[in-house]
Image 1 (cartoon, rainbow, N blue to C red):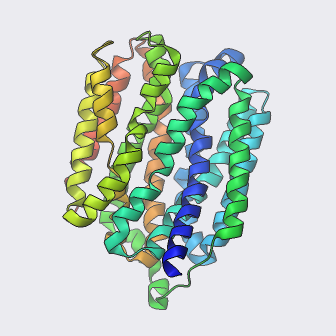
Image 2 (image 1 turned 90 degrees about the vertical axis):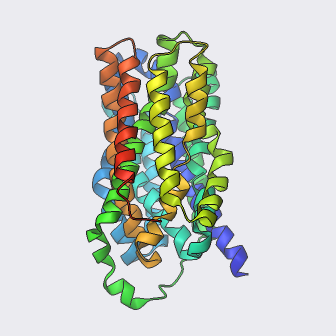
Length: 382
């Protein structure tokens, strides 16, 4: 019975964060039409992606504290309702400011949704299976991204950009009802840990792990946001192939995440996996900046095979902090990642405005990955 309950909780956690990530990534396929309708520059269009993450910079830490104090059920339900409201406002928006408000509200709910969803897993799965569980949980972002970037361009072409946000709203509503119906709170097994939980915020290694995650996030969201439009405009790649290439960082993760998570459990080498991933990603972005079709496909494929950082990184949280403090650990992680998500798309969009060739934009992504590699080298996790 306990075994089945563990997997049910994992499924609920997956669905709630999957629905938010799908709403987040539903915007890139709509960018060309949104830019045309509202007369936006690349930097302004990138801001609509960044605004989703602005609230997370300030709310991820409070979300972790609220999850610990109020319980994951209350915070999780509230977060999903807020996400639904933000997605609906975006769908109904008739001006750039209205779209910005909707995306910001989506980000407020998303910050709470991500922290709540990831905090559920270490509470129900033991450390020796943490990598495997997180490898499965971390499929939420790649699957959401692959579906959004490869299916929604057809939806936009046939039914207009608003349909993307209508689909996102429906999915978030479904996730909300599933969460309310199926989620079960797990009682705190260690009251002493509850009393000293906030000491986790002073853990330097946790913040260093968060910095690694934030730098990676800056590069990866910049790529998924702008790779499709850049490949179309600069490399003359057909639209559907361009967005497929933009989602390649997540397509291979559907296979790699569970595999790498399990290997990191067995090999006792989580840090090595994180460092190898960031090094390969940096090299791939650097090559993409200078190559044209057909050679361009080689570093894109290399990028797809290198983004296996998430399972060992997430599993490291419950090794740096006790599992009872997992919500605080994930709140630190996602405070840093939301900062990266906020900076990345706008910075890369601005770089594209300054350098229309697109090469410097991908070099910027490479720099963030190499900085992440340097920081990962200082981690003391196994």
